[in-house]
Image (cartoon, rainbow, N blue to C red):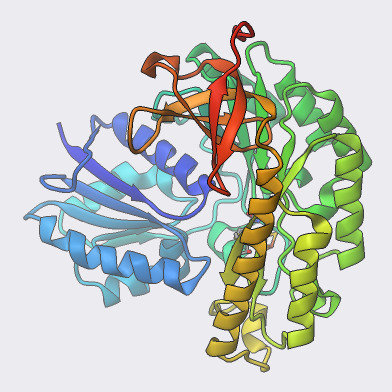
Length: 436
Ligand code: SAH
Ligand code: F3S
């Protein structure tokens, strides 16, 4: 049986897409290999959101090409493949195959051509594509990603995603529900709904509030997460559905990007600092204890020291529990490429460090006061080191707990006993075992 080795970079959507590709190829008799040695097909599922993400892939292609043998194929798929298309074939001789996010259905045929000695690419946009009939190959476990929306129609000026993933399309509610039901049958109790602006999901008159309610009504779904929502798509209806659907977890990842109105405008984000804070306030009021994480970019063209300080202030004012921080990376063909006022790299690096320090300090402080609290955790998997298991609270805190290995998938009540600042240790609260 032919063997496929697949590496995934970037966001959760890529993880979900890799599961799709494994499904497409499994139907052709491919089996997954954990190592590149001897693999008939090596695929890299790539990210194009920042230059360093692409550079990592370039480096990895160099390393992996030594595992090629006559007749074997190395393919680049995903966002970087879509962005560069056939240019990748020209620039990297070891690459035989280039396929964008809407072309995975054609992988078997493209592979046949490649195995016949052709070098092939498929970077067509197919705005109807949802891969509805493709059964994914997923790792077993209690959590799963469910894609509910592909592509993006927002035009944030820094972002390559609308180019790499094409136009936005929502998947039908019945299909999302059917897939979730199947997951529950296989032991999944927590689903994360995926989309680039996931809370703008819509099907006719039904909106994201209806989707949350429909998924929340499925028996066996105990936790719902979603990523990433767009701040201004949190309508009162959506917030109400979150507050009243028991399974929806008390955590939201809410990318803010900047705390300066001038920068937000140049980024073409659809909100001001004030509007963003209103959304935060509405979420906090409706969902007690909700935690917030965010994405922030520093060094966007024209960002002044003063504007950067507004971003620093935003970290505290919004009360983020966690922040993913990035140095702006210019992406070819995006509108921001044409904004002339480049921020020097040393300045951007220095701002990034200050932001990281401020965000970390805040995470630490917020977590320190949580020690002693009791939370329900879902045991997800063994921790990387030692014998402890990794579990997660509804508010998205990671907790190391001393429970048997066969507790994966179980819900337990734990008391948080300590924190490293970012993760926690926890002890079982006896006599309060939670049955799934
Ligand atoms: N809609 C998606 C965005 C995907 S990109 C979501 O909300 O998850 C993920 C994050 O990468 C963005 O939120 C942004 O903070 C960051 N990012 C996107 N383009 C970038 C760029 N050109 N330079 C630096 N960071 C970028
Ligand atoms: Fe990118 Fe903005 Fe869409 S960050 S993915 S263009 S919402």
